Image (cartoon, rainbow, N blue to C red; front, side, top):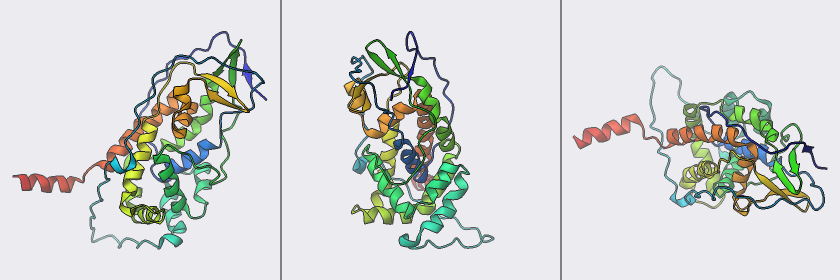
Length: 294
């Protein structure tokens, strides 16, 4: 069944850009698991086709994982008045510890549902590894799809992505933009040894997980932002982007297009801040280097 609306011409209004934040590690994985449940592809009517329209050129893709920059190790600080930090559990028994670390990040139901999955960090790491290559691993955890119906605009022999679909992702965007980059950086460094262990179990060098994480972020940052109407075409029982350049994008970048330019811009704006926080050298280390230079 196809959902249609009557319009004379598909038009878009400019969206304001707002400062935001997005989750790292758990948040990215939870987001993509949530997004993949909405294919944006209800069964279209037979013989419905849209001509290929002119769209912006395909974006420059991010560097390969092995070329992504390293995330510096967090410098340990000691406060004699504080209790010693809890030691990390073995990876195989890390679910409860990880939930305790991650649960304060958000009280949203979708996030809480994701936290209940077993082998939490192992699945997050496997998903981020796929995401670093632009892939979406499906059927990992049961998460509810965005509410509402997927709508298209039909105009004679053309099909357009209806911009009313974008608001279905507003709540998701709000979830991911409600956590400060600094907090996310702290969570990453708390869980880093466990995440690296899980990455090593996939057959990779354990100390390269940080490169995979940055590459995953870069995949999202490379997603195009299109403010004009996007043409679709029907293919079997699914809709596809009519422009081959858009249809050939990595899966995560196509999903970002389905979220709409406002949500995409908000997510990307603070992903850049998260990336900056993760890659920042510690103030102490920089001061030491300055002293040595003198």
